[in-house]
Length: 579
Image (cartoon, rainbow, N blue to C red):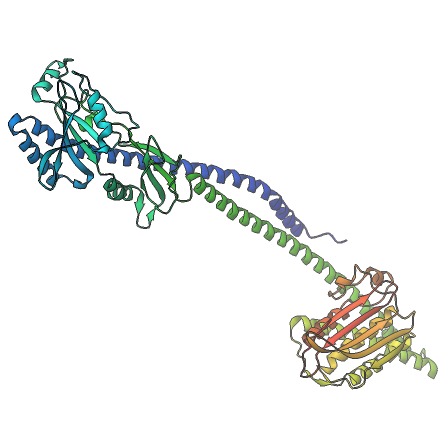
């Protein structure tokens, strides 16, 4: 076997090394994608936490500010003369209602008065129809506030509600200026707490809070031009099944228990509500964290988004690596095929040189003997003439094959397809092979089915195919001495066709050689060992010619059982097929 050139071997070695490095690249890519995905998840989580925290602060601030303004209105009414208190309450409440940014945020505002002697607190609520405060019974929604106020003992300033309180009612103590002065002197809190007899009670409008207030704030903090990237729920902290707001009403009514970000809202700090001059340390404060903001990505969770992106990156990277590996593998295969082709071509050059050298040497030797007068008798001269003719014909056939193959490969060959009588073509082909058949001691049995239609073919090219097949049969099947040439018509689902078969009873073709029998320059090991002359171009040329005739060629045979080559060619004005 020839050694490959140094540069080709080095290139092939480098490509193999790169191919072996691809698994390492795949592992590095897997780790890198994992690190990038983790960093992206942390970035998205931090950004979401920042947004939710800002939302909670803004929500608490705006609600606290509105509650503080409402409480100030009640406080100012409480500080006037008791005879003018009802009128001042009404005036201050109307003023607040006109100036507030969210007048619909509160369903109603009321005043509760606790008797010093005990008993149930008295409730006075503002009536929008009359524009005055009027005494009324305690609504069912105020039950929790009533219970707390009733339980206050004398001298206690305020009771703090549990953070899980669900009631939308907020109670704020009203303390007179002298009482505040006693509570907060110049030296700080004195520890003297006055009796708390009056309370402002504000009921949040949950419908407005959920449908407008929260919706606007969520759109401002989480939204963009295309909508929301997140599913946002506001639920009760005590019972997550109680939903105050849902960004997607089509989703299940069951609120999520977990989210990508969960933060308490309505968690008012005392300093935001300090409007009465008491100082932040003792200021009345709202109930903390009544609701929870639960945020999940629309894809399900941040984990799902990052996981999907990671999977997508891994798939893309894997496809790129596979394409790279396939490309390198194809280059390696192409390089090896090119090397095999180069080796085959070199062998072809050596073989064709040998094929040329033998007949040329015989012709030169016979010509020299004739020219030098060695031949003196007519029988010897006739013998030399036969030798020259035989070798010249062999040389001519070899040149014809080489030129035909070269023309076919370059695409320069033009076939003149005309209606042809297959009987005439077979007869001329067999007659042209008489000398080769005689030398091989073979006889041809030619059977052409009567009445066959004409076929569309180039006469010379088709005869060349049949002669090539007969010549091959004579080379390999000369021991049996029989060659059959048959022509008949067939038809299958693809349409009618005409079949020309060349059969022999020779050694046959091995199964391993069948897939390569029509490859250029290919010669079986048995042919090389038996020193059967040839260049390995004949069958390749036959296949090329028949395909140019819109037909096909098939071969069948088993070792020791002979060989059959079948040519399927179109019938004039009909469709060709083959089974």
